[in-house]
Length: 109
Image 1: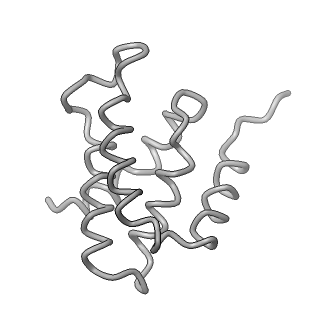
Image 2 (image 1 turned 180 degrees about the vertical axis):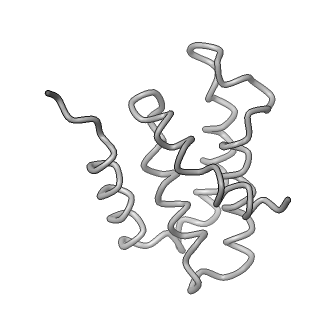
Image 3 (image 1 turned 180 degrees about the horizontal axis):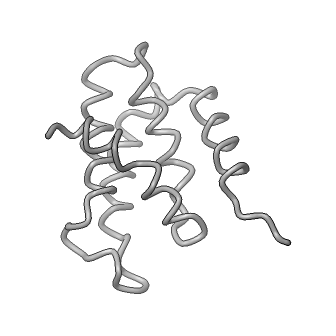
């Protein structure tokens, strides 16, 4: 299965699981929107899909369930990809990410 297939099948579940737990969820969502944008160059899409696949897969260098450390490797991989591709992550991608975060936040009853 390709990184793109893995990300498309698992990204939204993982993004919901990390809401409020990691500070980079908005960046990951913006990267997802950039990676799935047909206007994004293929090399950028491949870089972002690779980093996002690392984020969504349950196995990695530091297991995600370790409190305080579990997402540090995911953050490092995403930060590297995000930094390398930041000129292609547009204001529109970031706005869509913020909109998704607002809608995904649990509402207080």
